[in-house]
Image 1 (cartoon, rainbow, N blue to C red):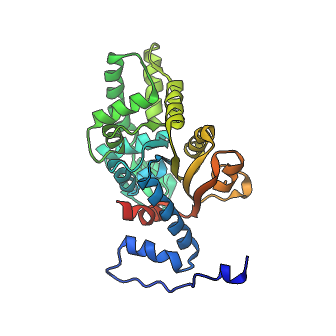
Image 2: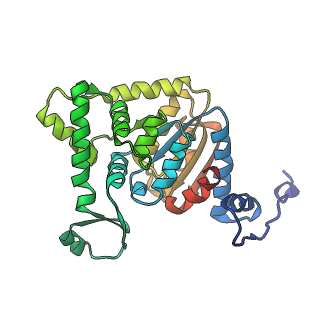
Image 3: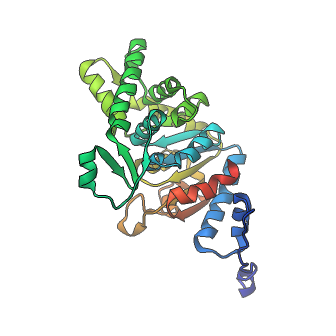
Length: 310
């Protein structure tokens, strides 16, 4: 390779003003040489292909961002059918249901947690969640839904149960409702880890013939994977939701496209910190895949990255 081959794009100063749109900002990131800005632009280009080509598009994310206004970004992705499959954690169900019926509040990272406990307020980062806005409302709403579904049949796949729960929420502000309405399956491999899951356990304690068939979920995922012509994934954060996404895609030779937004680092060997490059060695991402690792807080990155599509 010649020196000049590496010097074919000059760094240009970023020009923005009051009328600059998110799309225009994103387009301008291409030649600014900005560090994370360049990564965001790369992710944006990949998402354009993922959303426009005939792909099966996965969206994975953890629960915490659903406690914030970023829930609206995820909801719009689902409402506009830009994704085909959701893989997430139990807490997403909790926060989506709780915020559909009650309110969370902007708080502070620094307030005394001992004082908050006395006041009956739970802190999630800088989000304040009163007791009445979480466990109590989820117990009431989910309990009624489970009772209703149990009267129809005794055994459910988690995906079908979540879909039926979403339909019964019947509120366009709910991710679960819009996913159910648009026939986008929501997979929660750790279904018992949270308030929604605790309601399933509690109901089972009283009705031992009530069953959740998790292997039926895996069968559905296998069908999705083996029928897909191409697959892409927008993965926000790590943990079980990220791993379940890349794990299943290894059975078709890996993802064709991937965008990963994270704050974790790879030095400790964690999956959350693992770059997408590592997944190539596991056959979870194809050797010729287009992918981008974007480091930063998803509540900032996602509005920039996805704004032009919404």
